Length: 113
Length: 119
Image 1 (cartoon, chains in turn cyan, orange):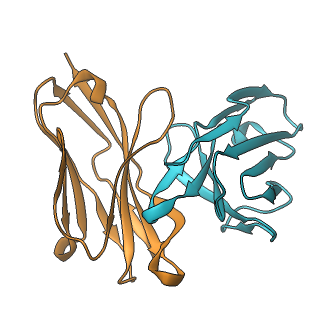
Image 2 (tube, each protein chain N blue to C red):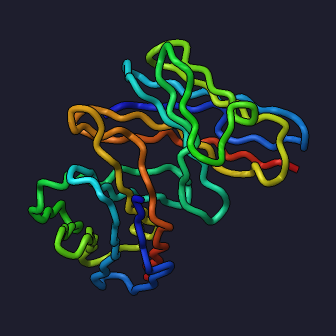
């Protein structure tokens, strides 16, 4: 199984600022994914990040708000821009592993004041 | 459109009871994947099982068992002799198949079932 780490594990931010979340995987993977889990809710896919190409965003999510970088096969970042309290969530990165497995990072708990 | 429904929002049982968590899914794909994850209070998602649409065999892993029935589009999860450490939110998820019928990684999650196991 893939080992995934995320930084920061949690943060408290002020309205209007931006936060960049890092996701590191211990093996090379083609596809990485970013999910959001709002308080008490389920997980929703934000975007798919493939190395060497633009991220693909799901309906309701836009690049200006959630820019993503994927500089290599083991690393990705998600930025939450111009934050508002509604952005308070857990953000999780995920990778599709071998034999159709799917693993998640520990998540980043974001609180926006 | 793909959809996953976990009708049970919260379940409370007493330790050692058996409990079944329901999951019903909708998809037009003939090849797809179903997952169960556990999310303890610490927040991380723990992978429990993956099942592809061509494998309807039920599976047992220790106290956990899964019943996959394509005829009713259900993938239910049973915990036998529940323990306090089983207390968590459990998510069922569906993934479409991509090129080569592999998992695309785009998971659609149900709303989750919060399981509380009381001592």
